[in-house]
Length: 268
Length: 293
Image 1 (cartoon, rainbow over the protein chains, first blue to last red):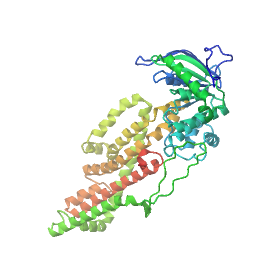
Image 2 (image 1 turned 45 degrees about the vertical axis):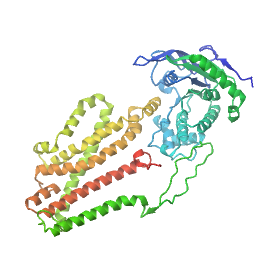
Image 3 (image 1 turned 120 degrees about the horizontal axis):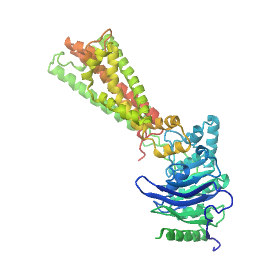
Image 4 (image 1 turned 120 degrees about the vertical axis):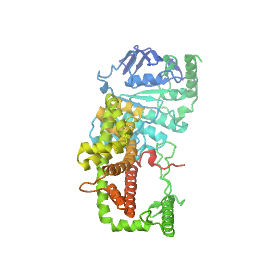
């Protein structure tokens, strides 16, 4: 199918309506002198599914962590036009590369954690956490400990925990990189369904062209040394995307285009 | 022994292709897995063999009981002197457990303080180390003079010996929480107290329990050694005093009987702390889980 195409996303600040997060001329230099990120301008629109795509060392994780408030930019600003000034009020969920669960607590208690930290009454917290676990396909595993769950199931618990506060934005740092391909495909599909249903803004860090094309509306291509944004692409394919899309000529075509853009961008 | 129950059925609606680790039940005898029994029977067999040889050697060579009593005589003495010895055992155990309790309270409290304030740790930890490396035998006489009360000084001595493993292990445990979990707690605006309560203390639990296992034995040793140095039992005497007393009177079977009680107490304390550790960690910590391969 030749209807599928990638187009360049409008530059930051030129879209209609205020973005959820606005990143302006952000640079990050570590104490050892490494410049992880240089002069990044990026708007994260409300409800968008955005992938940050690039090779290792391109600063995509660093950028994601700065958006989350884990570490601040050396220069530049990250504003939340859609949220209050109080950092604690910025609703966000974060999924790490590892499930990062508390091994001493069962799945339900792990998902309840953000609610417990916000002093939500126990009964209500339990209900909301159980609901969230069911939403990620883990009904019946509330009492299971992380050690008793497979890698994919642990990641589901981690996603449920990130979403239990119903955040405006879900930040994911290569969450499925350590999983096998079959499990990864399932989780990708379920993540898309969740996003389609809950309508949060999703920012997904990955080094896989295929994953980024499959998931996102928009791919931000980054290059390394120093980490910087090289291209900002809109993906034309409509949602819902499913197994059929994954095997379509349209998908293959988009992957080829994106792959070309990535190569061009990183100058390889 | 290879009779295994069918694997727990895993519903696969929407969950991923990987199966959960299978729970395989092993055949049991008297509630214990078959493969566990050699671990109990082998040491018992060795013990019976050695005791038998010992008894035989003592009788064959007609060794006088004030040089080396046979195990049967030791057993008889233990029964005959049970009144005196058990009263002394109680005194020793009381000091042991009070010292251990104090070690847990002070050790954990200091560990928490140290991880909250680097300054406090830098200022105080060296003194904890000094306390640990100074031989208790050398400072026990001083403590006895300073403390005045003999029971109190025994308690202090046993505490000094017991508290360091708990302190150092708990410090290690409190600072070994997963860094990304710490990040996650920060993201969700956790207070210091919440961080401690929900993250650092649970993460430190396995380390603390490892320290407790060591300290349990050390508290007993501390209580006994301190009483040896004191050389007096005051109003009520512990087992160490009984050993000294029996030694002077050449009642060697009684020395052995008292030693046996100390050893058995030590083993009981070790088993008890191991059991506590197992019960608290069995659901989640690697140390308490069986390897699947």
